[in-house]
Length: 223
Image 1 (cartoon, rainbow, N blue to C red):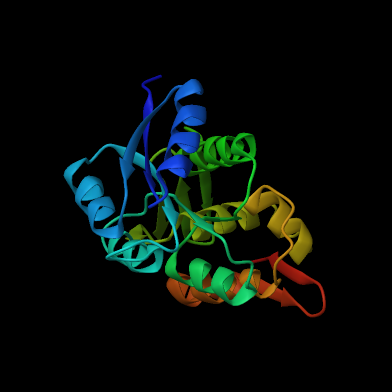
Image 2 (cartoon, rainbow, N blue to C red; image 1 turned 90 degrees about the vertical axis):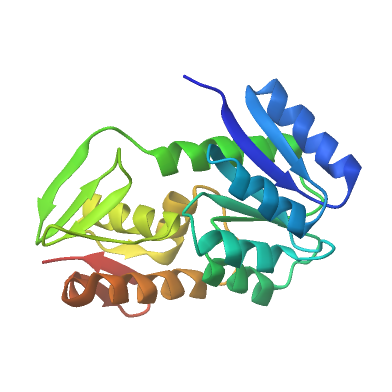
């Protein structure tokens, strides 16, 4: 398997070096940017970047602005680093399409594990899930089709829909969804799930009705 490229954008050189060293030891190619403008320049000049790590507070353009620009053109997985622990910031990140959210200080080993897990999930598996209710998921292409027409989903929306379909007919609590789709113990607001489900339902159109709300618990995918 080819070595995957990861872009780390952070104005702290020590932080970039720390992340670079750990990722390099784990067979990643690391590209660096010291501000938001440089991050966009690097990202759009290199079409092979598999994942982006953004610090929120950066000169010229902050992490939110960089995320918006990248998301307007790409579904590449994005991890946001922040010194803040405000849940409103975290919810904003997920609204903008951030896939993981890590608060400083953090363990570099944990960051590497998150990078590895997110890449595995975003690249996913080679098989397809059989069509169900007019919805078809091609995991290898990371593409969803509604009545044979492709729709655009973020990485997390794709994973959420896949998880729902793979567990069709099963009542899923918000905690279970968070732990399986986000793949780690999540201590933020469960509204994150509701936000993603709302956007996913909207993108699925009439098929969004397959995602049933179980009041006081979570959701169930049912046709």
